[in-house]
Length: 177
Image 1 (tube, rainbow, N blue to C red):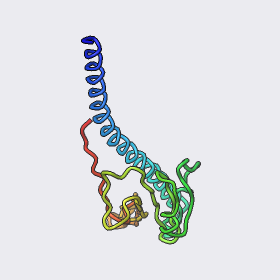
Image 2: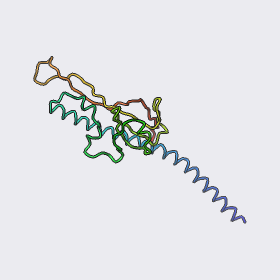
Image 3: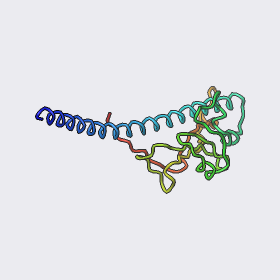
Image 4: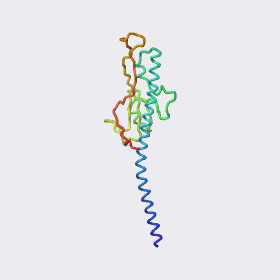
């Protein structure tokens, strides 16, 4: 009888320890999963920014001054191979919201915006918007650059591009390891 009580006590202790470990681990996995999703989203924006720089260089080399046409293009078409989580062009955010998938990219043809549909959004805050949609727009900024080999006052316009947020958001995930 004493032996049986001891085994029941041991089982109760083991179950308690497993439950505590599960609680700690599951909350940590939520944070790690959200960090991974944020990093993947930022990585894709980085790849698109690289392709934008290549497109700008090709425009300059060709002497093309019409950068507005570049701003109207779908940046995913610049990639040699579209990522697996790119789902194509849709006409509006309503169409995007009706898509069941998450962790996917779309191009909104009506607003000319990149749209990322978030899966893990516990630490994400989007100003006045649905907490699942991140929107980015291509902005071309111009600055003056000196022409090499010309008079010091001669300048030309140089563009650089950025993908800005169409609607501000913060993704505040703790930074501790």
